[in-house]
Amino acid sequence: MSATAIRHSTPGLEPGLESERGWESLRAPELFNFDQPGKTLVGKLIGIASVELSGKPVTQYLIRVKDQTFKVLATFDLAQKITRAHLGYLLRIKYRGEDSTIKKKGNSMKIFDVQVKPDPDKNFADGSPIADEDIPF
Image (cartoon, rainbow, N blue to C red; front, side, top):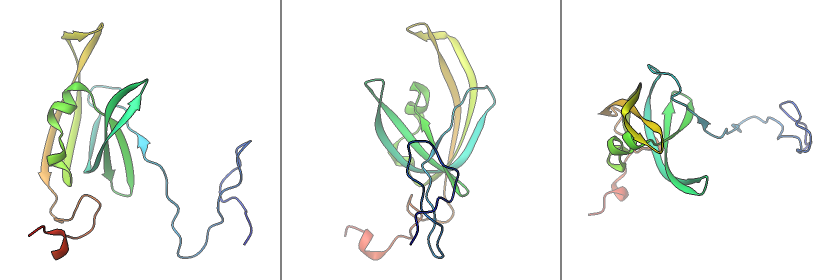
């Protein structure tokens, strides 16, 4: 098997894997930024993890939108609204803007509308169906 790149080369990196039948390439989740009021993300919450950013722990949400997964870093407002209880739920998140009456270290608080509903597929967050061995009794 050759080590032919399937995408352009980046200096200093080895070529990528050659495309083969039956194999699917995986991509790392892309960071979704709520940088403009009105920006909205709609998808399924598939994961919640704690990551370190600038030496501080930050909650990171993984949200599946069709065939792509996005990372969303929690703000204070999002962390108050989205919890582990919502894993597997469909989410609608809309960034409304900043509330200048609430500040921390000179930064205004970002405000979001968040709506949830159970996924009609009734699968686990990873998309697998619930089996008898998944039930603890």
